[in-house]
Image 1 (tube, rainbow, N blue to C red):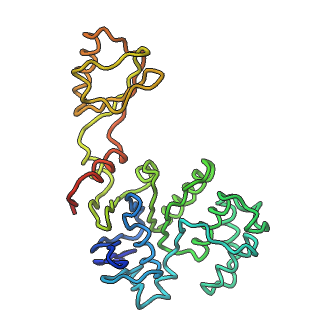
Image 2 (image 1 turned 30 degrees about the horizontal axis):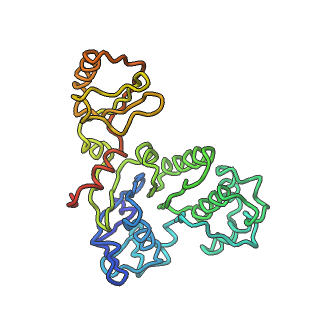
Image 3 (image 1 turned 180 degrees about the vertical axis):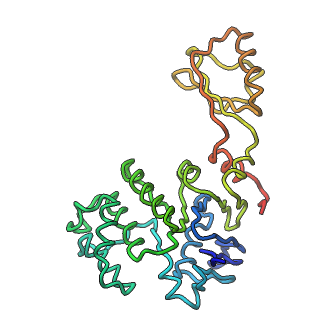
Length: 308
């Protein structure tokens, strides 16, 4: 039986009186695409630092591909590639020199073919000989991704990889990461773009105040939101919902007459249109969507008691 790609075993981390991680446990099988989500300050980056060996937990352990981070640290670091939130680079190196230098950290002397492939996949070939300090923020972000992949790690951690980057980079990055995942790499993603997590990931963990409050496959987690449906209606300028429907309204009517209604059940759509007809209000346009991860996320973050 294959060893788990990652095991987080009762990890606790405190900074003085503040508990950043409170008895966090979960494991990932090889080849998973996993999302680690939570608001700012939930403990995501602290947990990633524990995975990378940059922070030592006060309790518990982290194992990467069967190697304990604290004791078998060389093998654990070889098995892990981390794309940090921060743009960390040497301003005296070119892009290619940065990747060659990074390869040397892992004892890789003849890594040119893989470096060329990474540069191509991330749209960096034309910048290979450009100095790092001359690159835009988006290009520097691409180099951070390339550095994390240069030693072909089986486990890849992406900490807010698309924060502040353009649409073209997001599309090319996710296409490449999907290829790596399909080839067997395990991916751990943190992001505030919840549509990315919903589209890409198979399982999701929600962190709140250093604790795991949900850990489920995507389909099961989305079902926690119930069978609600969000409906957008465009009424005539100045029109508002009848009083009977006001409790379902989300936000206020915008300048173009659009308003949003969250229905407890799709069957209630007939009630909405009947009430609008009775009030002699004309629906000029409408659209509908199912409960999404953002709605579930907001709902669970407002729960007072962790559910896991």
